Length: 332
Image (cartoon, rainbow, N blue to C red; front, side, top):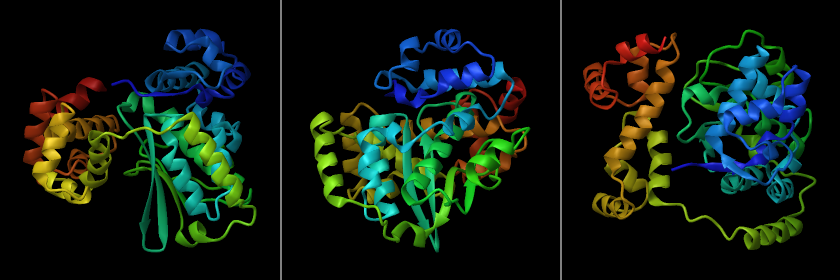
């Protein structure tokens, strides 16, 4: 399945590329992105092609913060009507829920979730079927845009409590400090922003719920909604549960409010199985972290939810066709 996204995700790409001495249209053509996508915001293009274009641009320019520099050029208005709905919500929590609800209109490959933990909340972003080799620039772009969108809603002085990235530290941190107002933490277990729970529920002075309802009604006419498959919902739950070591079909079915047999029947009707989805999500996570030399194999095993190193080893040979260590050596 190919996840698509709006070409609005490349807003500002051409100008940034030129400022770094690059030819944006030649880069787009080589990455399989229609050159018209650099000027028209509403084309549908494969998310993987966008990730490929951002990575190629970063390498060609000799910078490892290309995606974050691109985020600096974004405005809440780049989200179209969704940005208007978010801006007019009564609280930041409601605004972020709107962004998450309609994220599929921007990119089918990206999901945004809000996870509360004690007095903090984590805004986590996840890419589906986007390998580690295509994820760094796209991830920094999305987290940077999320930060800028929050500032557009609550005020330009806002800054997160922490910024988390799964990839390694850049050669220069100037852009990161400028965009976020602090230094992110790298080599973490997730990508996203950390903020205080109290910030989520504080009333927004500029909210206009009547306008928000009108714009949402307009969107419902333009895009009557996407029917999320059971497999989509299972994928999201698996990604959440894997690091806890409790990712089982029974646990997932309980989250969905059904028994395990019903879950298996639903998935079978969509032509997939729970074990297939579990293997695929584990494969994406393991391959991503194997590309990080500083991450130990034991840590990767834990993140992927394996009960023991031997279980991890057997799985790697079955799914990857070789040991995790051999895969890391060959990819180096």
